[in-house]
Length: 245
Image (cartoon, rainbow, N blue to C red; front, side, top):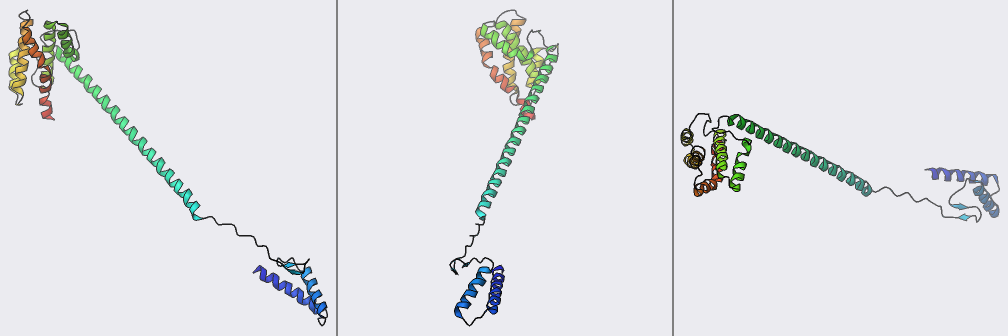
């Protein structure tokens, strides 16, 4: 549009100049046209020095930003967002798991302390008084057995098994009850393993009575038989709680 206006102006100037001069002479007409073009605003296609046409210099258009570059930036931002979201989820899962495990450990400690407290309160009902904590009775029995002090080992094992039977609700530990009463309580249970558990405990009772009341050491074979059944006793004594759960 601007070029068209410029051309129109040039032609008007040229026409005015030509109209003011005598056009009958060809040289005069050419000279008038040259002067008109020279006095006109600078034209990109006219060279006044050579009085000839010249190629116009046109600035090449600036390259437009392609969509690919925009997409590259967009893809980068999108992947960065997904990465940050993934990291946030990982941290969230980590803290949830850590909190859960911490609570589990805390609950187990509380339960352990509660069991120890319950055992301590029941120790007063045992027929003997021992120096160790109730939670250490079995370990102490094993230590004394390995040391060769079988009499004390039997006393600790008997006390441990009584507390276990009471804690797992096979018997009701009360001072003054006889061992035969405890054995009957175990056998009266509806559990299929009641008779087996009662037989194992009965062997421990016999060793304890021989050591505590008889003041003599039982035969080595009888002691070893009871010690071989410790793991079986520990497995069977928890059956009632498993059935209740």
